[in-house]
Picture 1 (cartoon, rainbow, N blue to C red):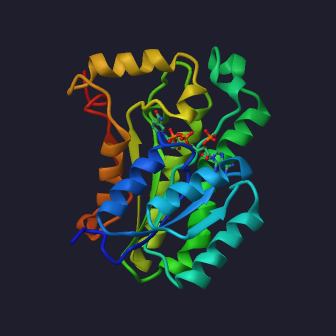
Picture 2: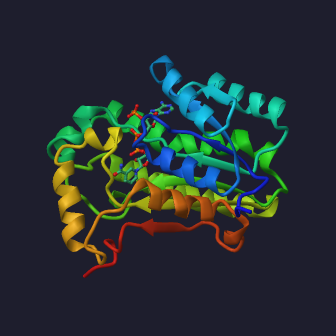
Length: 256
Ligand code: 0WD
């Protein structure tokens, strides 16, 4: 029996078969969880619906996190279909492409900063707020995905650095408040992985090769490895862990 048997998990951020959310869904499914999915916009609907069917899931809902009504609708549907929720996976990030080119202060604009923080950081609090009534008292867990740029000035990551720093602060503030409700809140800081979102970062290939050379394990990580860590953090095996950012980066961040 898998360690997520009987758990109902909502997974956002599946955009392709390479998405980190895809790796998370596969690990959670393997461990016995029941899954629901969201997709961003019509262009992703059929892909996510097909993937959900492979996972034995019938709950597939539209969600653009910049639209409050879509957030409300997702949790109204989860309430109608499941009544409760044990896990929320936030695997969403976005910055306008021109923000991720050149030097930070040359690229950053008020609007670029606002959009990046809205979609990449505020959205976790927004989903957490809406999910809370369904998760209260159930030893449930919320999880988000971060990156080293939250704590280090990684070249080209630019405005996503401040956005991820805000996201990680969200993890701590949400964890502090939701502990009494028996809801844990954590983040995974993943090493670089070639996904659609990563393709938008100028010089992403050099991030990959730098991490490969300098990490303790001398390689990059896979979505399967992030998926396994995510499944663990959202399970009762991690019942003593909250407010934490766990690095799944083949031992890159701690190297001297
Ligand atoms: O190297 C990497 N790939 C890393 C990614 C290293 C460390 C962290 N991460 C983070 C990302 O910043 C993000 O928070 O992991 C999370 C998932 O990213 P991913 O799996 O690398 O990327 P991708 O497969 O592109 O999924 C991100 C998705 C979007 O995909 P596209 O490529 O279509 O923008 O986030 C979703 C969307 O599906 N998304 C939204 N969902 C709802 N509402 C929105 C939105 N407004 N904007 C983007």
